[in-house]
Image (tube, rainbow, N blue to C red; front, side, top):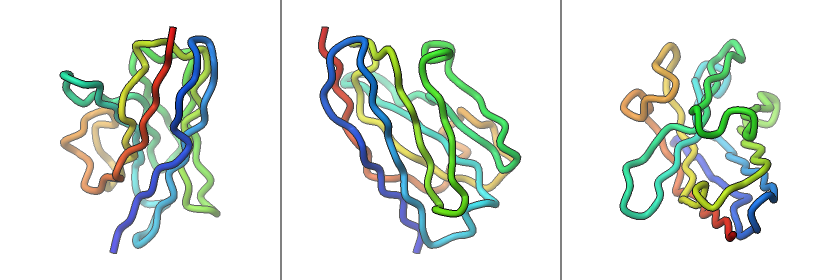
Length: 123
């Protein structure tokens, strides 16, 4: 059974940092592409950052230079380091997994989703 469990969300002031983690189990982690998505109240879910099986990454323009996606294949864990946070980064953040190759920031290409972790950035 595939499981994705996010952690690391919380409340921070603008300019602060958070690191999200996503622990994966139940499938061959290294063969999957992984992504972080977010959904703010009243808005559609959007791709934030993703990484493929070769380690190539893709970022939404709104987070480039501030967020970094990484993974530890030995621990089957995906990370999202978020720096210089802004109030507009406030959202529920979801981890997702899908079989590579896929369109990295397209949520429709991902098969498995975590339950989400809330990030709130105050001004």
